[in-house]
Length: 281
Image (cartoon, rainbow, N blue to C red; front, side, top):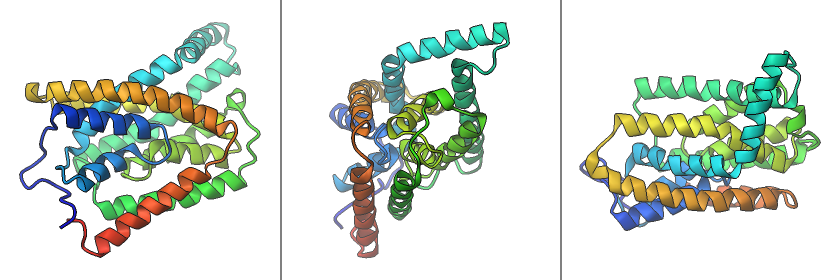
């Protein structure tokens, strides 16, 4: 067979250079709307590596979390201090308070659904056919949203309903291949946000989700033997996540999402054809 998708004896720990490579993939794809989880599953399969599991992927996402905290430190400071001031003054219509409320409400769906999946199934499905279908489906929705959306609104106009809508979309990213960034940017486009503002909101909304997922998996699957690989993967993810955030925000200020749509559909089609042809185990 061309690809060995899953190791025969459970989830293995990556070597340090494998962990660096996986961190690089995580960092480059976490904030691009092409699904980091999918690529962390696909690329090891193509390289005949074992599937290192959802837990390793979730832990190295902490590097992406640190990157987004550093990149948006000024915005986060402004939102938090503005929210405290708004609560004290009872000015609940302030931009900072509405942004904070939008992120808080938008986090609830993925927390509730994530806990339900974790307690019921342990982890979402990671079959390559599921990933392929999700890549194509969300890619088509993204193309539709990019053309249908008015792209007039910014974060200054965020509403509670936006947090609910984008939050539900983010929860769908528990399915590998959907992409948390892809689903939330797409939802933002349908809600009339400008492309770069939809991406900015998606990044802010991802902070609690990344933190919760990473910490839960780190605590539940803690192993001293796995710490070196997790540390290398996390540092690599931090570096490449920061570069990815900066590039995407600048890119979406001038261009549409067509390149990501084309990539998703091409990758999804390749996975489905490979699965049906028996190239993947």
